[in-house]
Image (cartoon, rainbow, N blue to C red):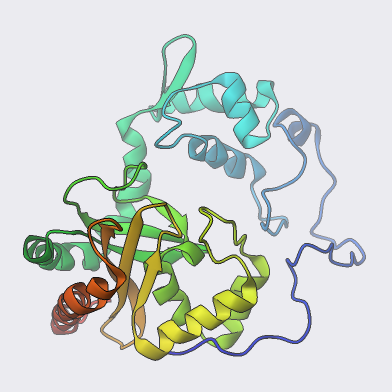
Length: 303
């Protein structure tokens, strides 16, 4: 695994300080009346604006993203607060999504409809990894009796693309499509360790290294050291940094071209599996499963 060991000596964009503003470009238009009617005038954080940027689409997607595992039913006001849009704009977006079949409305609250799955299925249906890996995950879980998952990196988060659970050990339900910050997860650190130094620097400059528990590594220098060790040893262990009582160990999955394309993990409750047992009992089986998945990916020429 490539180790992101070099740190930039100068501050990178996104470090919390406002970047100098140059002259306005020709492709930056003044806000129109429709922009004002559609809600807030600023684009989503980190999104570059130009003449090709469709702000209404950005805001419509933000309305969909306002819903989640703990936010399955929301009022108009709650969606407006979550997105930063005005109530009038939020209402128009929600009613449009209702007409399109992506959202339902019972007269007071809104919730997503199954049709919203179409938006993610196109990606998953073209991804060979879940289909190839699922039998191997099932075999691994049957052998060690702990939950196993596979994720890929999407921006600063990991996204679960395959999972075989045993019994639930987290307060948050995990399923395909669940996202967690990369810095606080074992799979995230494996994927961060595969970055080249420049890419890892860009990640550190923009990522919010929030503390999810009292144990979460949030210092950029410390995270760099941790990720360096992951790259050196070829696996990552996270001890109760994502959630109290949860331990996880992860290893990389290499695609047909040899680069790290995903990560596989095993998670267990801290009261049941010690850190030493994670290495001696779970790691060998985890790495063997990763090798079998890689062999199947190579045989099919798939990533």
